[in-house]
Image 1 (cartoon, rainbow, N blue to C red):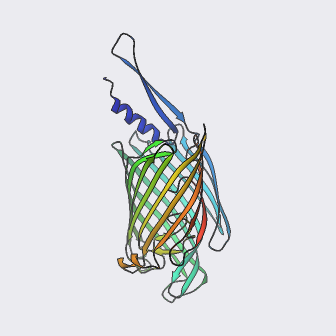
Image 2 (image 1 turned 90 degrees about the vertical axis):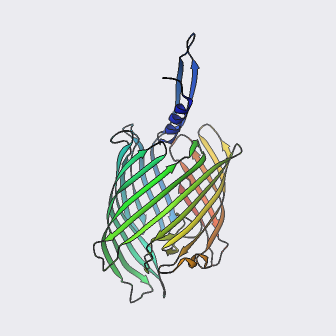
Image 3 (image 1 turned 135 degrees about the horizontal axis):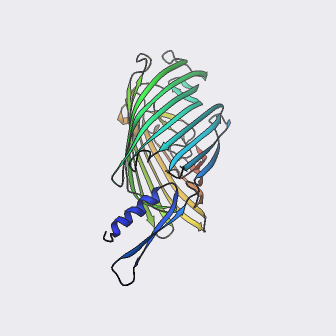
Length: 373
């Protein structure tokens, strides 16, 4: 076939997106005394069997941690196997399998099991109540890639939610014990045009997630729909800078319930705000940050970070004017640092400090593995 530089670029693009590949490049040279060419691909592999651990405190200042192990290239076929154990007052555990190329280069499947138990605040008119919350779920997804940048996931989740009252405020309309079997149909579509060069990203990605959730007992909890769209945009700034942005728009059925689906939380959307400090039935969240490489060696990168996280929520049963309510608006600027291993997949240890500047704000440090978004 004829030499086609655009096809070679597509190959490099695909290779760099694989968890097993740290970096990829190519070289083209003409064969002597002819019109033929040698095309040589160079691949720097990632180490892909990664233990991970995180330590944090809960809203009650209880010591909590999560430890786990993930293999991102099982059987040399980019199959992801993983699991974790979590101690957050209560015991939790989960495991998952993701095989995107199980039935060929475009079609795969994913399975997961989770038994997660936490102490969750529930926000009532009379104050805050704390519940023991357990979610036991099993999920099956079909994965399909069409085109170079399009990905589709569809499947079903069977799960049981169990709320048990511990202490705090009460309300006659809010049960102190609630256990209900549910199932949900899931749809995820993404268009991914992000280009990778080690720790630097450029381009954009748009991801749409929709769930239709039904309850085995509609009198306990009616059916509802939840969906959110994430738009992320990255731009290289000079030789060592990277500007990163994320806009999340979320909307769910507007049920007047203390168990609303969109949480305001350190680890999800607003760094420094605390662990699950509020809930809503719609959300607008914008995160922007500038990442700058301070040190870049053969395998190690030290990166600084300046960010602003902001967002607002619609109260359960409220209306869209709630987005302009000062009680719902939260803006948290902050600074952070990243410790990155260039040849271990997703080996990014991050520390961020966020300080609120809106009404009734807090401050806090957030630890994690991987970039925040």
